[in-house]
Image 1 (cartoon, rainbow, N blue to C red):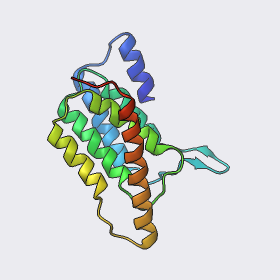
Image 2 (cartoon, rainbow, N blue to C red):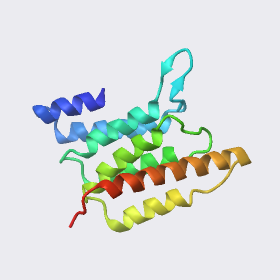
Image 3 (cartoon, one colour):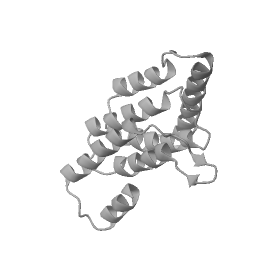
Image 4 (spheres, helix red, strand yellow):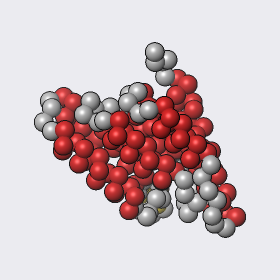
Length: 159
């Protein structure tokens, strides 16, 4: 629902800056607390909580009221859900997270050092589980970073 609300807000602004920032805070909390990260659930359909949260970040990130601090919090929330070993994302969640991250990064509102640190934390996510969990973590981070790289490659250079 959040992308729809943001779309309507872009057509005719009706949300205040504090309301948009509150939406961001609640979305970050939601993603942090969400434990069921399955994409497609056989017999039930799409759950896709992680992808839907990523879509929410993508829509919010493009709004002027979102500050560098707000955007950095989004990036951290994305990192926290990408760097997991408990579930292998297999329904293009990496692409959805990369879409959101690309919008955030293209805003040029987050310091370069913070971006470098964020990428480094993803690339060096600590292994702390079974062999299967460690391989899942590696796959999730590798797929996300690859998706982000190719999304950013398509973006025009920003001076």
